[in-house]
Length: 85
Image (cartoon, rainbow, N blue to C red; front, side, top):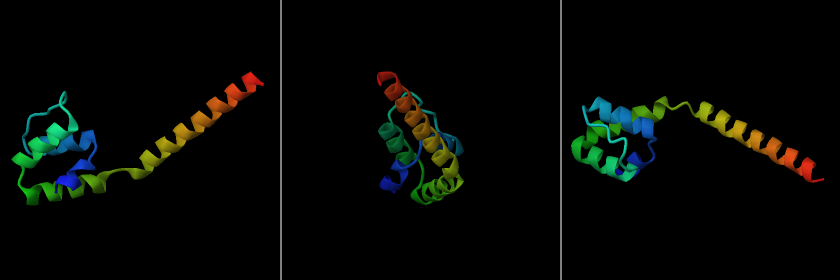
């Protein structure tokens, strides 16, 4: 369970905290929040909530964002190379 929770993103942590009526530790580290969640939420409930969070991820949105950033970097470097030549 400890490994499975570490793959969550910050918004997913916040959602799990909200589902379980927990305080939001916005200013704390991911490790700190992980320990608080593991201590407060029963393992069976947490396992189900983590699985639901992973299922809701829009991985295509993440992929598109990553692809857009790569394309933007290529154009940036191409423009800088033209300026140097």
